Image 1 (tube, protein in one colour):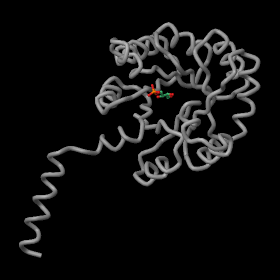
Image 2 (cartoon, helix red, strand yellow; image 1 turned 45 degrees about the vertical axis):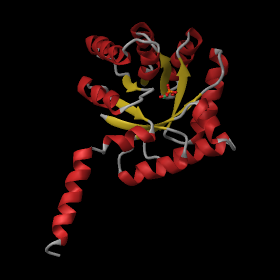
Image 3 (cartoon, protein in one colour; image 1 turned 90 degrees about the vertical axis):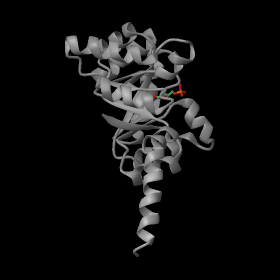
Image 4 (spheres, protein in one colour; image 1 turned 45 degrees about the horizontal axis):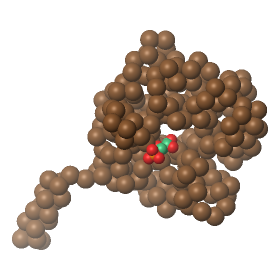
Length: 213
Ligand code: E4P
């Protein structure tokens, strides 16, 4: 499973790069707004820093305008992937972009039927938002399971990015289900490496070592 970092923060990207754990980045308008400053130079810098796909989202709501924005965003780097919201206008745009060989990530996906439309339109990635489904009292990971099941039936090439990840359990389940990608916030990436027994064990090894060093 690939790990994308779900952030627009350059420091977090740098740290994850040092860990050698990052296969790509996903941003969205909220994440870029959180960083402030000039979003265009921020997005360009992210594309330069990352050796893998970087999702940049359009903010238009009509297909024609989405395509225009996408053509601008792909200039940010050869690794730019255009995030398109899951609406009928979005699906129209994905069809057009797919014909133009511009890679897309269909975002804000909350049902299997939405994921099916995205795949049929030729999306490279689809992003089911598991945390936001959990927030409304449903089990977000069930959606990932069902999307993978349907995609396998028809051999769709669309890859599933598990998005809106809130905790390590989401990552574990994504891997168990065979999701292609998990896009993780930095705080979750950090937690994946930790275990209290690892800390306790290391402390003991180091204490014992002092006896003979
Ligand atoms: C990534 O593609 C999504 O934009 C992101 O995971 C959404 O996460 P949130 O629900 O925590 O905002």
